[in-house]
Image 1: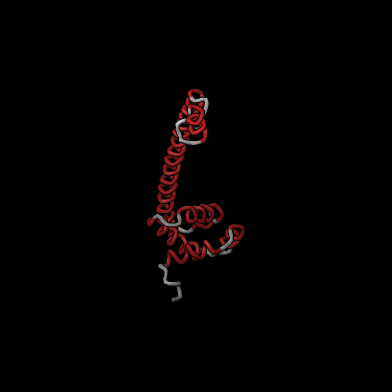
Image 2: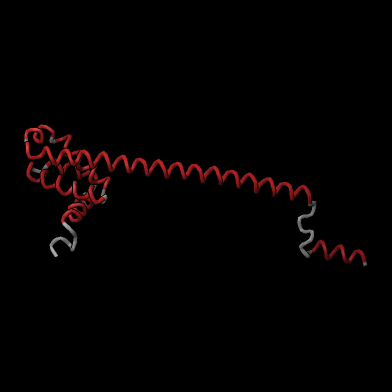
Length: 151
């Protein structure tokens, strides 16, 4: 009940998401080194599971850049930092590849749409040129009028 029926790493992500973007950096500046160490553990867990990648990377990069001197002096953070670095690189390159693939697919869809549009316009233009009366053959007014004139 205390964690809203979430796993601890999911709860930490939920809390980080609930902080407005403008206030997130200010909130992270207030953390002590012990809290940063715990937060690294949850960020690593999220990145391993592929959840909240953007938020986890953003928080991790901000914490490392702002608390760089303190983290460098604390030897117990070296192993989690290496793992965090590996996971951030892996997940960001994975996301970059996915975005690149999606952009290529969107470009291809755009090209196909333009080709279909061109084909449709040319077929409509050919039909208009071939038929001076677009209502011919549909059994509408002009066919009836022509039949009445013949009688």
